[in-house]
Structures are given as C-alpha cells and as structure tokens.
Length: 509
Image 1: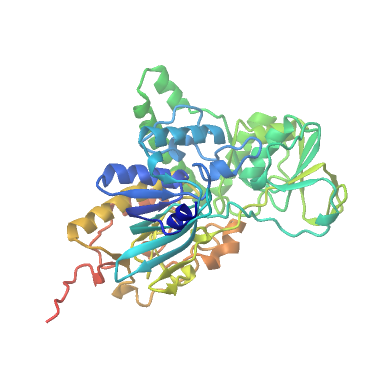
Image 2: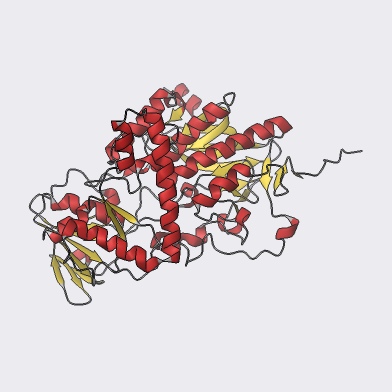
C-alpha cells in the first residue's frame, strides 16, 4: 500500500492537449479536437465525479435550459425533442455525444486542479491536481491548455448577508445548492430573485407548494412562447431527416435571434409591447405588468429569460404564485420583512441570487515562475491572453446560446494547432501590435452593454478589453461567426516561438 501511494504521488501523464472541464464546453471541444486534429493526444480533467458541469451542479425543481437546444446543442449532434429541455434531457444528450465518440476514455473525473505553470524553456504546461479517489497528487504535462471550466463558482454561489438570517427558523437554501430530498409539498415557499433560475423554480414549486412568492429588487424581461418549434415539426411531418432538420432550424433560430437583437436596439418599445402581448396569451388580456413586470434596464442589457408556455405567468395569474418588488429589511423567525413593511411568511426560502464569477475556475496560474493576474492581461477575441502562451479559454455567449461559441472556438483552436504543426512552432502568444500601442483599455465588457450583477461584481478578476474587435469579446455571435473563421493566423498579433508573425527569425551568428 505504501509503495502504491508513493507511485501515485509521483504519477505524471503527458498529452498534447489538456482540456479542463467536462461540461458542455469541454465535451464539445474534445469532439472537435478528435475530428480535426486526429493525431493529437488529449485528456480532460474534471473536478466532479461525472460530466455535465452546470447541468450536474443544478438540481433544483424544474431545472431546464433557457436557450433552445437547436442552438444550445452542438452543431454536429441533432436535437430531436422540445426546444427547451430539462437538465436530465441535456445530460442524456451529452452522454450520447461522449459514448458515440468514445470521449469517456479520455476523461479523468474527480481531479481538482491546484496549480498550472508554463515553462518557456520547455514550452510546456505543468498542471498539478489532487485525485479525489485516493487523495493523491498527480501531474499532467501538456503542450497546450484548452480551458473549458466555465465562468462561475460551482461550490459557493452568491448569497448576500441579510440582517436576521440567523433568526429564521425555516429552511434557507441557495438554488444552486438545492437538495432534492427537501419536501416542499403544501409549504409556503419564498424565492428571492427574478432571473432565469427564479422563472424556472417558481412554476415547479407552484405545482405542489401551498403558495410561492417571488421577492425581487427589480423586474426582469421574459419571453413567453410555446415549447415547440413549428418549423421543426413541419419538417418532421414531411419526413425530412433529423440532421437536416437540426441544421435548418438552427439556422432559422439564429436568424430570428439576430433580428430580435437588432430590434431591441432600434425599436425597444415595440419589442417590449410584443413581449407583453405574448404573456397575455397565457394569462388573459387583463394581466397587470405594473409594478412587478416593468424592468428598469434597457431590454438587451441582460439576458432575456425564456419562459416556455408562459408557465411562470400562468402560475401568477392562477394565484398559485405572487410577486413582491421590494428589498429585504430583515429576516424574521417566520420569514422576511421588506423595507416597505411587507411581511412574507415562508417555510422554505430559496435564494435565486446568482453566481460568484470565478475566472479560470480559481486555479492559480503562473508563467515562468510569475503569478498570472488575469486583470493585467488583455483578452484576444475573448479567448486568448497577452503574456499567457499556448492557452485558449472558452467563454460562450450570454445573448445567444453558449454552445455556438464552443463550436466556433473548436474550429479556431484546431486550425491554430494545425497551423503551428505546419510551421513547426511549439509556442504561440498573442501581443498588442504596433497600431495598438495607444489603444485605451477597459474592463472586460461595458456596463451599458451587458450588466448582470454577477458580472459587475467580478469584473476586476476578468481580463481587460481594448476598443478594437481583436481585443474584446463583443457578445455578438452574428459578427463573430464571420470574423473568427477568417482570422489570419499570420496576423501580427500572433507570435510563434517568440517571433511575431510576418517577421523572419534572425539566426544567431
């Protein structure tokens, strides 16, 4: 036993590419690597005991996507069910991708990364991890790191410190930490928050709870629509094959989303009126939007939460759920008192108060012995960083489906790796060009562009952006889908083995 433990402590595995995370990003990236760089060896390190990432973390009632699966699903794997899917359905879909492509043999579950270090002399990443099964410290070395670990802390959600929390005698839990064993049948449930999570759990709670109250500081925009895709249903009725249906419907949805984005900017009042009319289709014409469903922010500054079949509004209209728009003054032994004086009794309080942003999964990184401060780096197209070689970071979209960018960056990374092989290069960096020397730098995204609370709280942990398309993540899929595939890998922002692309290496005399 002692000998085995010593061997485990010194175990080192080398791969060409190390993927961090076995969620929707990591599994998609592995597929693209296998298919576009078939000669590359790779491994996936996953902290959890299973795949799925966010779909394994969240176990609250009714957990579902807030993007349609024709675009949230991968472009290479057809989606054949209702557009809005449950967490279990998404996990099943991901499991099929893993099995069909033999990705599972590359995944190392239960590995918590504790350090990542780049050595420029060896052109190598060394990643240290603790293996959960036996507590052993293991080491992986890799030529390239593909960071697919997501953007928030899966273990510590954002929970404000409200006055009186210790006095509350009921059950208080954050939605992200929900225990499926909790019985809410016949109970009074208070949900704090008004985003996509709240919109999901409230209809689910309302099915069995005595009553559900949503307490929000400010309202959110919602899109209520049937959980069906008319085009997909027509094509299926006509006998069209599923891959064709997936491709056509995916394209149509992206076209419609682009049009909606533009209209939100050009004619926001008209879009808001249409959203309200869509809600009334489920509630009746007398549904009141004031004061609980009239947001204060511009319609596309935050994600538009999808409500399939208007279930949230149906619950409110039926009296199974109610809404209070106010702030918490204090918890009481039996619930919450708001600053406006409203007493809300609750057996169970569920905080749907959002994430804690966690850049790079909280992993400490260093380059040649120097710690990496991500806020000191400048982000290249939302995926690479100045001063950090041989690494790509997958950060998806918030306005469009996250996975659209997984597929797009899968193509980019594979093109980059193949380009490096063609050049015989062992290292790639991105660096500001001569024309960027006086470029103003700012936080990762502007407040008036996209401003959910979790992002605003964590901006100082994120990389900086410039004011040129190359040096920002603009959240605009419809621009990037044309720009990123056309990236000139010999552009002067790229350095290969320390030499700026387009310049010749000077041989030593």
